[in-house]
Amino acid sequence: MTEHKGIYVGTSGWSYPKGEGTWKGYFYPAGKINELEYYSQFFNTVEVNSSFYRPPNPEYVRNWAKRTPDDFLFTVKLWQKFTHPGMYKEATGREAAISRDDVDLFRRSLTPLAEQDKLGALLAQFPPSFKNDDFGRQIFHAVINTFSEYRLAIELRHKSWTDDENTAELLRESNTCWVEIDEPKFSSSIAADVPLTSDMAYFRFHGRNYHNWWKGNNETRYKYLYSEEELEELAGKIKKVSGEAGLMFAQFNNHWQGYAPRNATDLKKQMGLPFVELPMFKDTSNEGKQQPLI
Image (tube, rainbow, N blue to C red):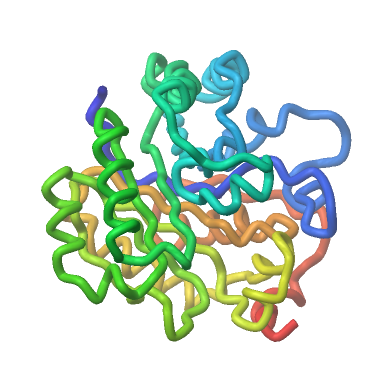
């Protein structure tokens, strides 16, 4: 595995073709285009979210690698069967009993990216209900041990993990990255800042739509455009670890109507990174700063 270095800024997912939150007409032009090819003109990384719902077909993944520049890196979200057993059961009607076949199936979906040296990291995102108890620690260790051959980033959301100083030490022992997230904060939320636990740093910016976080749907929850001042704050977090982490990812998940690519570009400007100006197909200049109040 190549020792990639530098700051990679992108978005969580690249395909949002339907619904009110679509990227069509906001980030993507009208007409038929290959969205990933278009996206890769502006960003050097993307987080694959479709893998959360099912392991993608390796041939599709191989095509993703071919459609992107040589220096483009994918980060891939781990299948929900490993991290969200309740959600998996609700979606499939089956218990999330993990087998060796499940592990091999998911690994095969990563192989085309690994072979092309385009696999930046594997992201294990756990839900807010995932606590630091006996069951949680068992799953936590199982994921780290099972996928130890990859650069692994783990997103924890419950405060019990930052309340326990042993969490950071366990992650450091396996060189596993503790993902730092920006999202609305509640009494059960994880601390706003987490320690650097590996030679990789991973930031996920979900937006701060506090009022719609629990009552909104999968689109309106992420209807939040970061302001210039907020982006300066996020840039400061990245710069803080830039001397310690050789590889850094910053992925925006505020995907409503192309807000994520807009803010990803804005962050690049804030940090003095090379960027390509985005086309603006629809005027949304009056939106964003007050979005959490909608």
